[in-house]
Structure formats: structure tokens, C-alpha cells
Length: 151
Image 1 (cartoon, rainbow, N blue to C red):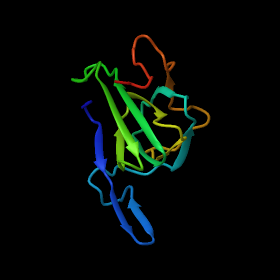
Image 2: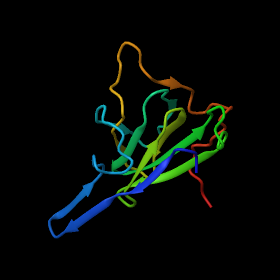
Image 3: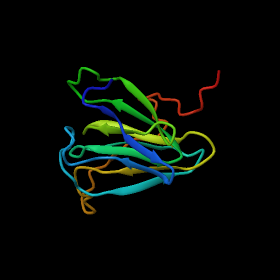
Image 4: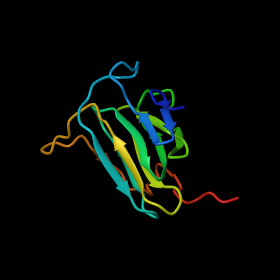
């Protein structure tokens, strides 16, 4: 596991009416602070990657469809520099992926439906000076193949 990444199984409470799922609580041990909440969606066949933040921690939960979330550590001095982690999350496996500053990340849908990610970053988005540092999804220095792994 990449240093500083946390994977948290979410509490899903189903009953005959449907379900309720707690994503994040202010009394959770991993709660830092709240910046804002937004949803991002990606269509099948599309990859939203790679970027990282210098300041903010992201908290990803897939609330629609299934998503493959991939992380790559390029942080100098990190004991996990060069490591890649993959997590498939969504309606079949409700988890939160907590992504620390400095770790590149991205996601793509799994299957034939769009994937919807709710993110609760620790910082507000700064429109004048965005804390977004990007690389192309197919960056050869990262060398990650986003294709479906058949077999």
C-alpha cells in the first residue's frame, strides 16, 4: 500500500425500503477537515488521470456504477515511491479511498455504465491558483495500462 493511503470499508445499512450508507463522519479517526464536496463523473472508455495536489487530501467514494481508482507515488523520500495501487470501488464494494497530498491519482469506469465519484477534499478549490498538477493518462514515466485486464 502506498504510504499514507487509507482504504475504509463503508457502513451500508440496507432494509426493505433501500439503503443508507455513511461515507464520512466528523468523529471518524481519519477526519482532518472539510473543504467542499463535489461529484465527478466519467463515461465508459474515458480515463480521468493523472493529477495530484500539493495541499489537499482527497476522499473518493463511488456512488454510481463501478470505478477503478489508481494511485501512483512519485513523492521524493517516500518509502513507497514508484508504487502503484488499484482499487475497484462502487455499488458492489463500498469503500472510501483516502489519497494524501503528492500522490498521483485517476479513475475510469469498470463495465458499461458511467462512474460517479463523490470527493470530499480537505481544501476549497482555488480558481485563481488551482492545486492541480497534471500528467497525461498515458504518461510513459508512470507506465500504467488503463485497459481492461482480460484473462
